[in-house]
Amino acid sequence: MSTETAVLLAVRPERSRMGKLGFLGIIGRIFVWSFLIGLVVIVLYPLLWMIFNGFKTNTELFGNPFAVPQQWSWENYAKAWNRGVSNYLATSVLVTVSSTITTVFISAWAAYGLTRVRIPFNAVWTGAILGGLMLAPTVALVPLVRMFQSLGLYNTFWALMILYTAFRIPFTTFLIRSYMIDLPTEVDEAAQIDGASRWTTFWRIILPMCRPILVSTVLLHVLFAWNEYLFAMVFTSGTGVQPLPVGLTSLMSKYGTDYPVVFAGMVIAAVPVIVLFLACQRYFVKGLADGVGK
Image 1 (cartoon, rainbow, N blue to C red):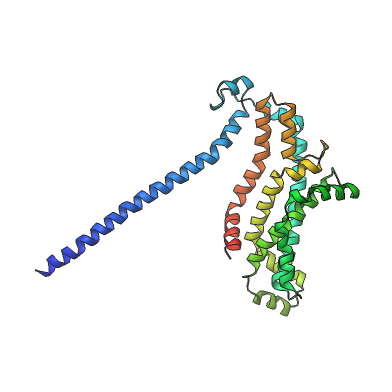
Image 2: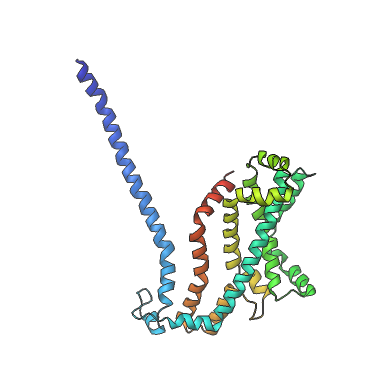
């Protein structure tokens, strides 16, 4: 057998094997892309259906609820806005922004103390903070209602701000702490040599280095506070302090027969969160990957 023949016989099975692997790779890519396209359709279709129905009339909605509107009725959004959605939106923005700032700041400061400062019984304090993750909100409803009524905070903005902050600090601290653990300690030592205080080191050095996880925690808290229903329903009975989840429920009960207006209110409630997530999605994914993965 010549050398050329031996080489051809050796290469032929390798080419056959590579051809099979290439075919399997193509099949795998087709499956992955088909799955992703199907997932996109599942996620986007209800959103588009809600948006389209917000522009229809009642007759058109019941006649063909899955079609594109023939006449785009922008007055549905004006009606929803004037029927209370503007007040609900303002309340949700106020509660969400204030509780987000408070939660992230307190959690970041606590995570800094747990990871960068030598304090007695560090593990005990860490366990105590993370133990708050095991507290179910429904279990504490009755004592919380009595406490806020005695303090005069029931049916006020402060009730939701305090509750959203208190119940999210353990989870937010856990995420930020997981990210801070792997930050180089040489940074703190260099800052101390330059005469920086703990506060200056935390505010001007550590926080900028934690930007990805901070953005992730902000988005997670915004999603929680914007969509939370249990506390909002129990602790806000007045129409002037109800956030969007409870307000939209009231809108449906009052104008349940005018479904396009209800759909328009839902779209108004969803737009701010969608815009915020699209604007910060790069930092959100990076922060969670670096924080939770560590």
